[in-house]
Length: 80
Image (cartoon, rainbow, N blue to C red; front, top):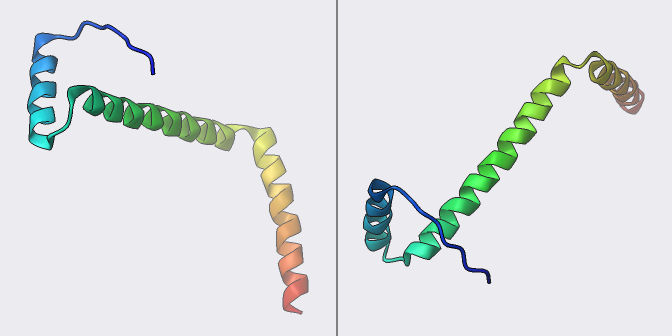
């Protein structure tokens, strides 16, 4: 495990200390948990952004429509 040194605003350090005490958790564990959650949030946000961009891409929409047409044909054949 690596060690890092950082500077944070006093107000943030105070809030960190208060929360760590309330949760009966070491400050470094609280920082680790918060950072993991934030990085996961960023990853999900990037996925949503790329998904929305794909929804505006005419080539992607054409591919999806072609796939949907084939899927609907398969469903029709299965119900007969």
